[in-house]
Image (cartoon, rainbow, N blue to C red; front, side, top):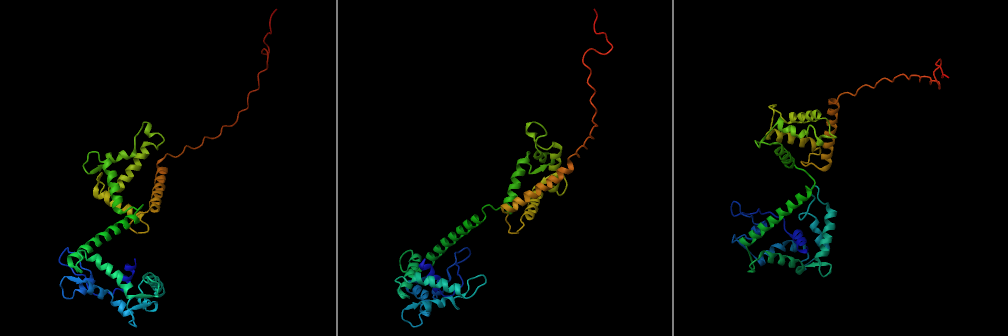
Length: 317
């Protein structure tokens, strides 16, 4: 970490362009090009150290072989650093440099001494000098730069994968729609006929149709969706039509226009689709039968008198 901080803060502004050996070659780092002025294809340890210590020598104004905090804080100012849009301001840069100073001042003397500054630079050179001949050659540095690029690419891919957790890209939606279409394409001709699409309506009768809408209504709903996708109205859904419909659906759902669908956007889309379907169902269902008028209450007949009916003989002797 100390080496990283020091090399970032003390490195001179990069003015050389990366150099390549041809198409597809890994570029050389600018510092290699700047040091190897004779174009020998190698950088000696002494030259590397001298190059890296240029800023140290510039900051060491009194040339006493050490840098005070006051001298070190100049790294927060031009030409070493300047305000950038969205970047730290002068005071923030000074605070960071104060923290870096504490890390680099290994013996807590209140100064960064030359030996303390040189140590991480020597360590960096050792990482490049893989055959330990006190020279960094083009093949050595190109191999290291290639590994660095691969590691950075892997880190970017991992960071992107982390960022995309729970998100759906356009390609993801198209792939999902195509997989669903493949399930309906029973004859595997790459197209979906109206008859094949009607399978999505479910069974017309039987145990699986219980607690569902009437089949005729389900059938109408499925045909409405079919006709939305079948833009040329030939009774067939082809891959380009399904892709175009997926794109349209994606753009409508991606309300924040970040090219990804998050769970909240998907939920709102599903709720809107459900509300639209409910409105269609209301129009398809037969109107409820009007209530039957209330019947007037009839008076109950008077109870029949007990005993034999009047006028009939009650018995004979």
